[in-house]
Image (cartoon, rainbow, N blue to C red):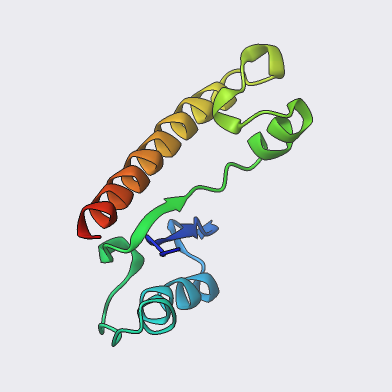
Length: 117
C-alpha cells in the first residue's frame, strides 16, 4: 500500500481569514507528511495550497452533512425531496463538483504510481 497524498478539512473563517489556531496546524501538514509518510526532508514555506501531495481541501458542508446522514446518501446526491433546496441545492452542486475533482485527482495519482512500478 502506498500513500498518494492527503486531504485537509476547510477551516472556519473569521473576518474572511482562517482562524489562526487552525492555520497553524494545517500549515504543518506538508512538512509532517513528507517526514512521517514519505521519509523525505521537509520543504520550508510549503503550504497545502502549493503542495502537490495535497489532494484537496474538503469544505465544511455544514447542514448538508446531517441531511445526508438522515437520508443515508452522499451529500452530492441529495435532492429537493431530501430537503436540499435554495442554497442547499447550490451546495449540493458544489459538493458534486468538488468530489468529482477529488476522484479525478486520486485516479491520476494512482495511474502515475502504477506506471512507475
